[in-house]
Image 1: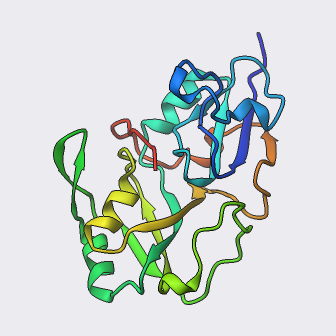
Image 2 (image 1 turned 180 degrees about the vertical axis):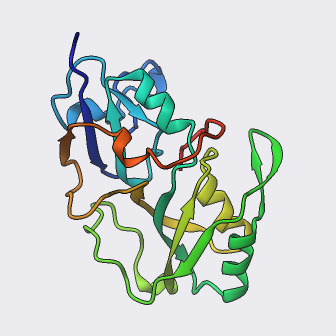
Image 3 (image 1 turned 120 degrees about the horizontal axis):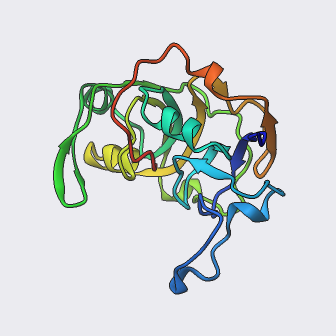
Length: 207
């Protein structure tokens, strides 16, 4: 019986959450295989879009991938938004806002949101966000148990504070901690981190 491999990765800005690029228009895009010598058959569990950063889980075990995606696993993000976000906007995010998913209206589920009083200690992004001449920014934490396509970006835009930077810092009980951008760590297993979670419907999980 072949041994399965499981990894955590700090996905840098500008990389696709995939190993193969079949789209001609994306032929110059950066792929995960450029970051580490993963064993053949490794797949990402869920995704982060090209402009997002942070914690990504990977495995060679399709059953593990399906189990993680089909459970109500908490995913926490640090989000830099354009402007000083108001308490009213935070409350709207907490209770749920209307966004569009593939052309259909969708009401987001209630979630945990709070303002970060200090700028989080995160690696500097190579591509500059912008400078203070264009106005102030602020940071919030958002924790979701769902993962619709570009959900957080759509949520913050819906309340008037577009996302400038998005970093996933936690999935279940697995934390990004001090893992540097592009750094990968192999784990003995993944399901021990999620064994107390109740099954639920599968998510798109791309923010």
